[in-house]
Image 1 (cartoon, rainbow, N blue to C red):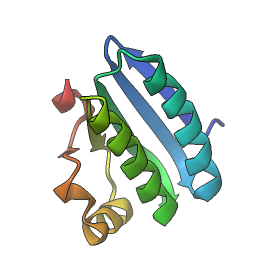
Image 2 (cartoon, rainbow, N blue to C red):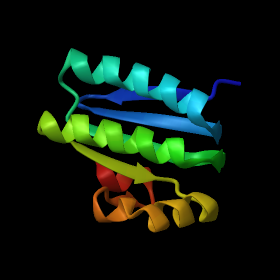
Image 3 (tube, rainbow, N blue to C red):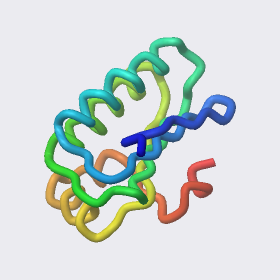
Image 4 (tube, helix red, strand yellow):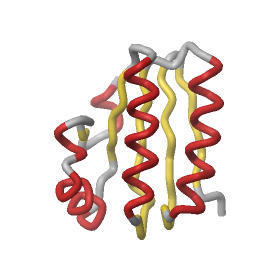
Length: 109
């Protein structure tokens, strides 16, 4: 099974991440998402964490790096599908002070 997929809907791109988000997968996601962002026309980036079973701190770095890039280009970033474990990591890191969390992916549309 793929570790992540990207779905484009107009100027919004949603990244669905499944299973584990460790440093190896975070680096792959970063590269692929950066390539899409650099092509232009993406205004909203949504990370869907509903399939995550494990995430370490590299996941936070991956989200923050993409957020900085989107912010620099005038876009916005959201997270959704947050389970208990990921929610705790995001709260402890202070990520929610910077990036909004939506309960459902459609809220960001």
